[in-house]
Image 1: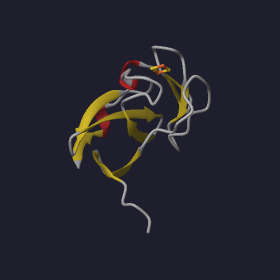
Image 2: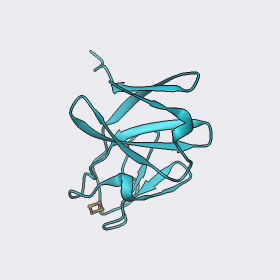
Image 3: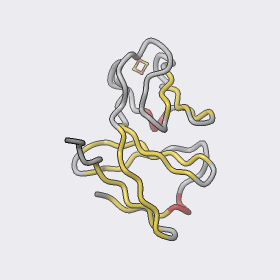
Length: 103
Ligand code: FES
């Protein structure tokens, strides 16, 4: 898991953090924060360099859109969903951790 400050995030400016050895893109949308894999499922572009539009992040390389809430690929050329991560907020502190797999 990784902790960052909510105040350090700006809407529309996603950042990359490391969570247990994985590159994770953290994006703030208003008062909500989402964490998804930072690596586009189409190729190897970093989504933290992409553009956030509402609840969608657009890969800068070929323009695939992903829903930050679910990780789903919503436009081509990506077809595979991004892994999503758990975000827990306590005051100004955000804890980002892998989601526990459902049995
Ligand atoms: S690498 Fe992201 S859309 Fe191609």
